Amino acid sequence: MKIIILEGIATSGKTSVKNKLIENLNKKGLSFSIIEEDETLLPILDNKDKQISVDLLREIIIKKLKEEKDFIIFDRLFFTHIFRTNSSIKDFEEIENLLKNNSLLIFLKIDELKIPERINTARNHRDKEWNDYVDKKGTNKEIYQYYIKQQRLLLNLLDETSLKYKIFDTTQMDFENIANEILKYNEVANVACHVPTNIAP
Image (cartoon, rainbow, N blue to C red):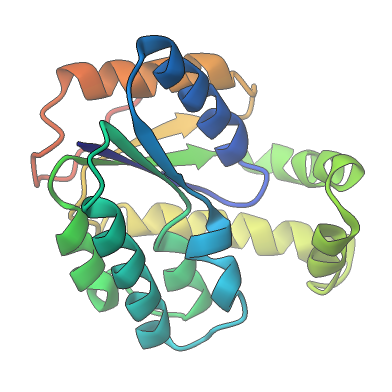
């Protein structure tokens, strides 16, 4: 079993990359389980208590690790919880320890100058609920700054994680090639290694 964790801000391309991964895994005849943010984040979207986050994620991970699948793919996991609860990697050490074997954290990064454009584009095709949620963050300028700040903080977490990770720039939205690279890396890499590694694409 190999574990892929997709992290990044809203509109960074997690869903698009995930869909391409699903397509490729189906072509290869490999079994997989997808854990959406509907399970990992949305049930406690407004939570500020780190222990509540840890308890939720622990339950989900332990349950999924019992499945006999070739791949488990998490669409968001603990990075957003760390940001929202104003906590640290150390506070989520238990979660990292559950994931260390055979896991690869994928961080999807957008050029900061393109984040406003990506947010505006998302507004046109996402539902009213998402737009209302974004609007709560303030003016357009405040919304853009919120996501820029969030991406910076999430990137900083990579310096502290004990998980192996890889950063992909999704500014050009080359999601198919990114998915191919993720699976190629999983085929040749010893992802059970506990030493965090940032390998630029």
